[in-house]
Amino acid sequence: MFVLGIETSCDETSAAVLEDGVVKSNVISSQFVHAKYGGVVPELASRAHQRMIVEVVEEALQRAGISKSQLSGVAATQGPGLVGALLVGLNFAKALAYGLNIPFVGVNHMEGHLYSVFLEERVPSYPFVSLIVSGGHSMLVHVSEPFQHSILGQTRDDASGEAFDKVAKMLGLGYPGGPVIDKRAVHGNPSAIQFPRTFLEEGSYDFSFSGVKTAVLYYLKNNGLLHNTSSISPELMADICASFQDAVVDVLVGKTLFAADEMKVHDVALAGGVSANSRLRKRMTAECEKKGYRLFYPKLEYCMDNGAMIGYVGWMKLLRGTTSPYELSAVANLELA
Ligand code: KG4
Ligand code: ZN
Image (tube, rainbow, N blue to C red):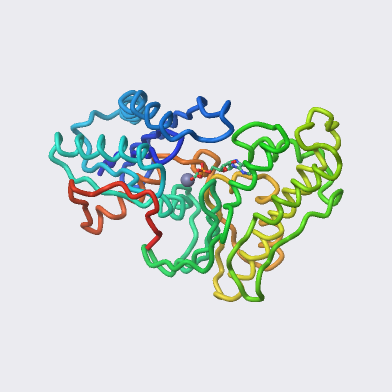
């Protein structure tokens, strides 16, 4: 069974072909037009998706070595995301499915990230706890069986990826900020500057990253470095990046392990754009090993927004006989049900 997965929720136009849940191709076209604005510009994102969607889908079919007549279903992201961006992929998927007379199914982007760990050969066993960290979300989810998941906690303000992006902007490091901070932090001292770790009330699985972001702002202000980032030496920049990153990672690792303990699971998963962070992977691996948990995370290509994770969830749904009507609308703030 060949399924096409289409993802256009933010600034990646992506399409993938899966055969019985196994990825045959995964084409990702990233939009670089946003870099000079320091963040994603919604209207520019929709236009770029429109320009790229046909080419990306054709490339995905070609790399998988199949023609569109061999497809058994088309899946596309319904939300959450930028509504104008979502509409491009969703409408393309509906039209293609209609033309081929095959089922169409809408997929929640966060479900895509949640099940992205199943795109790998080594997969977690149910039940497991998953930390989903991206530009728009930070959440801890308990998954008891396929499509049976409950949100344990989520961010009360900034998502972790958003904090990385905003801090990078303050430091004059450009957009997206996560990968740059990760790279700069490699040679820095994570204990050089004491930024706060916000754990909230005892027993809470929620996150808050606005405090650490503001602490970086005040550090720069108090040291005369705000809007004067060119005077920051490479060594100090590395220390600021490493110290900020460590504060975020401490909280992410601490809360995930607390959730795993409380939920009495054996397996822990990491997903979403921020799960590409090298320090997070290293620290989570060490802590999970110490406590006897098995850790699972997708390869980099499946951490960022991609069509493969949407195709995978679409395939799971189609196997269960779930399809979507052509009236299905894009929903900007679609919740993880
Ligand atoms: O999942 P994703 O591609 O898109 C959303 O659904 O938001 O995540 C994008 C986010 C951005 O905020 C980006 O800065 C962050 O993931 N990110 C990272 C790293 N690579 C991407 N954050 C920290 N370290 C990284 N290596
Ligand atoms: Zn995402």
